[in-house]
Amino acid sequence: MVRISCRTYNHAPYIEEAMNGFTMQETIFPFVCTIIDDASTDGEQKVITQYIESHFNLDDAAITRLETTNDYKMVFAQHKTNRNCFFAVFFLKYNHYSIKKPKMPYISEFTNSSKYIASCEGDDYWIDPHKLQKQVDFLENHPDYGLCFTDFELVEGHRTHYDLSRDNGIYFPEIITNGFNLVATLTVLYRRSVYETLPLHFWGKGWPLGDLPLWIEFAHETKMKYLPDITAKYRILQESASHKRDINKEIAYYQATDDVRVFYSKLYHVDYTPNLSLSYLVIMKCAFRHHDTTVAEEYYHLAKSKGVMTPKIRLFYYGTKYCIVRKTISFLFLLIEKIHLLKLKMK
Image 1 (cartoon, rainbow, N blue to C red):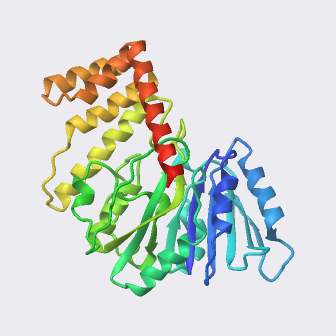
Image 2 (image 1 turned 90 degrees about the vertical axis):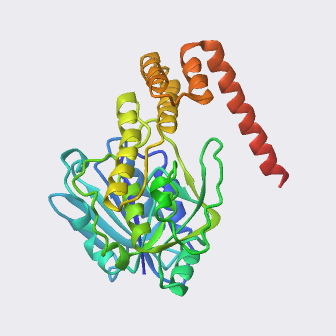
């Protein structure tokens, strides 16, 4: 019924939480979690192996499969107590990402037998045991909807929660013109039949992000349902697709987000102009995190020259340059976080 897609690399400290989120799912239908470890070097494959040996029935010869090729080792097994839960784990023998070799052919048999696809990468995790069941229930009862997503929280730190409900299920063209990503990948469940009709215009573009263009294409083709339930935890790592140790790579990621929106606005004839003040603010915050005064200077002067200067850009610019301002901003963020946690405890 459902395939859970979990792509992971060097997530040894976090992958067990992700796997716990999968095995805790209480459903009336079977689901298989395809975990693809892209030749991790931090011991993650050992963590996954020990988890499977502890929690999955490897003695049932009628179900369990072990397979080895030149590209991977694969184990397929059923959970010892959650009989609807199956894992198909692919331990890749060499890193595919670095040579741009596709991994999807390895899991085609599990994809082709699934009606719905869910996603959660190895550093994030689900906290609601009924996540899958609630989403499947909605899509089963609403065949005109192709995708269902939910709310989420950060593992560490405060985030603003938005009411993303749309009574008519229409998120296009807002998904292009809105300044932030409406759909969080770790919360998504979608119909495979709809996915297979998408043109996938983003293939070959070289963008360092694949989720935003995919959700734009879904929104263009089908209605989508937002459930306000908080079902997952999102982890911000120092080195991930959207957060890099290399500030230039991180800036390139943010700029690619604008490129995606511009590309689809032209393709679908949507009136859209990039919000430069927001783009420069995001980059200034990036400079603030990296303590990079060179980048801060460059984008501060760009914002001034283009007439998109805002108080927040100034604040993070001076926070990057001057220690006292940085400490003040950090203190305010900490204070806001404590107030947020206090409000949650009082509910």
